[in-house]
Length: 228
Image 1 (tube, rainbow, N blue to C red):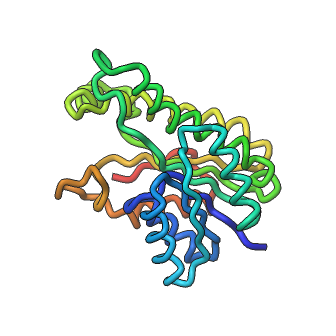
Image 2: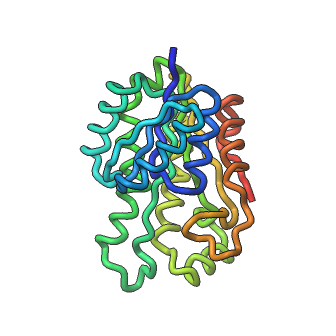
């Protein structure tokens, strides 16, 4: 039976490496993001590697759109085995003057969109004893230095979202373990090469993160791993 990975928030870094790694292991790949053109180019590159890949342009902040997208993936590629959530938005740079709509948008993508995807894909995940794999960030940690860094980077809203997402991973993991659905997170402690955050100072190879996700998927443990 064909296995399908849903790559949400596809971009040139971690998520593309995950798509290539899982695709190389025989998974069909569903690429999800907003940009039609960028998704098409990414899918073309995967197909050139012999990987089955299709695109599903979606606003991941819209729960109804996420639910509809899950149904489309199921119809076109078959049941979903893995949900990889890499989506984020940088709204809420400074919580003292950011609009609440900016902060809400960050949570809509990072938390509520993820919940909507899990709920919609859950019948498949249960039937296939699948997995939910989340890209986490060190900004989620409760630490004075981390908090100061988030403030200096103008990433306060993202830090709030990543903290909530980190808790969500634990809660979903505890809830879904009895259904043999694994939930895991790779916390990235640094700048990933080739991403929007990389201004020439990237030190983390996205392929290394993708390999860590694969290791979690195969071992189904631990709940949280770090790459840095």
